[in-house]
Amino acid sequence: MFARLKEDMDAILARDPAARSRLEVFLCYPGFHAIATHRASHWLWGKGFRLTARFFSHLAKVFTGVEIHPGATIGRRVFIDHATGVVIGETAEVGDDVTLYQGVTLGGTSLHKGKRHPTLGDGVIVGSGAQILGPHTVGEGARIGANAVVLDEVPPGVTVVGIPARMVMRKPKGIEEDFCAYGVPTEHLPDPVVRTMDALRGQISALMDRVETLEKEREASPGAVPGAAPGRGQRLPHVVSGSGDAATGAEEREPRTGVEDASVPGSDAASPVGERDEDERRAASGGQA
Image 1: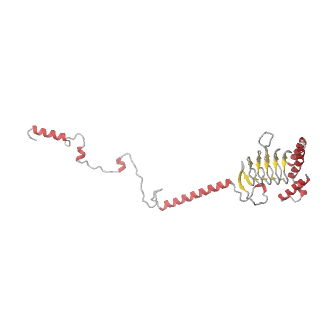
Image 2: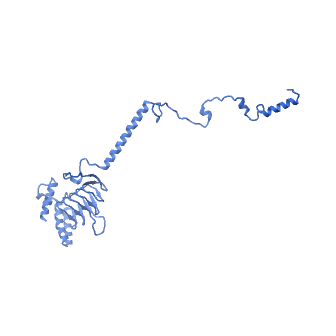
Image 3: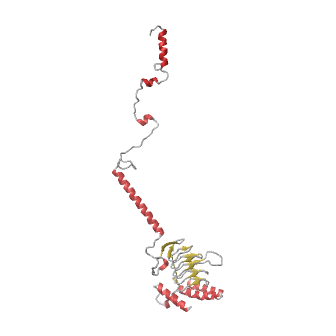
């Protein structure tokens, strides 16, 4: 046990530049106090002294602000930075070289007695205020951004952020990176919301350029009809009116010819029957007009 406590202090010295000595870590780091107390209470839990183990974990919560159930499994070189508000449930499993920041919750979402809390792989970094809920596995080397809510499995080596948590970047294979505080890099973070906004701004800019080009073309040829093909003459739209006179303006009506008059009903001069009757009347009167 003392060898593990020494490893825990060395891990804190390696990851926290504010720590200057093991004595300072031993006296002033509540995260170290919580881990040390948990190792004792977890041993008691495994030996069957359940009430005593819970009492020790309760004392640690009062003095450190960290609640770790004595049934939880904590690996080697685990660092709980700032410590206040951290909650680790009974069936949670934390691997080696894991870093947890303040306000982290490894909680369960079901009421059955089996596995209901998350499992963190080796080298996982969980940012402040993050919530990992349910019996999900966070893969080795993964990073959980601050205030993220993890409700599903997290693949190894990825960074997830948001509510619910979604992947934003993947760690390149074969490259060992330095320790990343709070689990999220401060530079070149490919936020999916930012990428969406950049795409929208690009589309709006392209549309504005197109509108400006069309306005310049219209000013260059003011007589052109919008939408007409360049180089062709202007064609005015045909307007249909209900009145023939109104549609044609002051249109003069042409005089009717004899043929048109002959087509008018009731005209005897233009009718063949009328001509035959006229000949019969002349013959009856002796050829007198």
